[in-house]
Length: 263
Image (cartoon, rainbow, N blue to C red; front, side):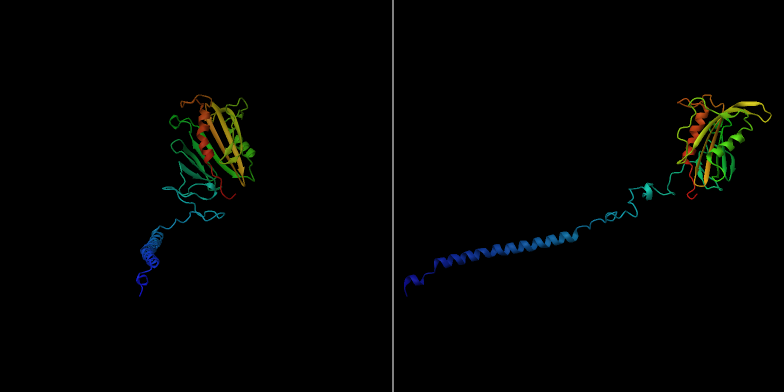
């Protein structure tokens, strides 16, 4: 046997060496991939679920709007809260005949006359002074009284104790701007005269502001009376006459009047 045939082939030995060195790297790569897949699966399984949307996908609206922390959920039509949660200030009065209602401040007003279609409140300007000022809120069927007719009927009633009662057309100080009852536009007129006693003796100058409006089948009127109306009230600033102060207090009632839902 020749000597060169007994020796190992150097190229075969190099190839075998390279093949053996690749095996550990291949095993490491396989293990790394397996571990990475296991970690990703575990992270996906432990991740918290995404919160459900508060509203369905557009264009479907929310059936119940989300509640703010510590607050009330909104309601349809852009109003906030519910009727039960609505902030109510003052004493509630409702007409048992016509269904309209409002709130008034019982600390500033005393009930003088309470009827199914009418409420009269006394001394709005200064209860402690017993000024005998008052406001009347009344209702009538629109089929029998328009706002003009309601004002005319009230003036006729007032004229029994104020014979010289006449519409005040002087100046703009007492002019009513934005005559509204609740959210219903109406008309307004101002009257002035001298209040007489039952025997005809003059008592004091008097001024009335009357606002009336109709919505559906209902007409509502609000009449404000003030004695010595042009004297400066001991309230303020700003300086106001007694009649303007009375009207300012009545504004809260005018704005609060709720017309019945079905008319």
